Structures are given as structure tokens and as C-alpha cells.
Image (cartoon, rainbow, N blue to C red; front, side):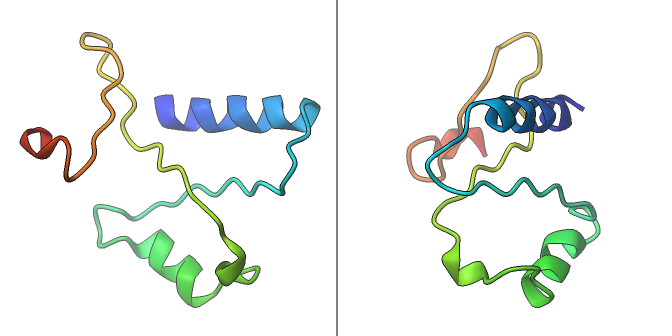
Length: 80
């Protein structure tokens, strides 16, 4: 729920503060079932996915006790 709330906040923010580039907000489902939502999007894109420059994955933002943890597979191997 926190991730969805953050996406909605960012969409509202960027609707007022126009960025230099187009931003697409996409929320996928079916992760635990084998990434079904994102797999469907990549095989049935609604725009040219080769034009995507970057992505921000907002999955689990924090546990309300330890704050927000940013995890990187190389830098924070112990977090996995």
C-alpha cells in the first residue's frame, strides 16, 4: 500500500511540476505468481519500450521501524 501511495503522490506532483521528459507510471500485479503483470507488459507494450531510459522500482519502501532501505545487489549483498 505504501508503494501505491507513493506512485499516486508522484503522479500528482509531476502533473503540476512538468518534467523535461515524459513519465509513465505503471503498476504491475502478479509478482508472486511469476511476474505475470510485468511479463505481459513486455510482450504486449503500449509504447516502444526501447525508448525507456530508466525505471524506478518502488516495491517495499520501509517497515516503519527501520526507515527506508535502498538495496543494491552488489553493495548490499547481506540484505538479500
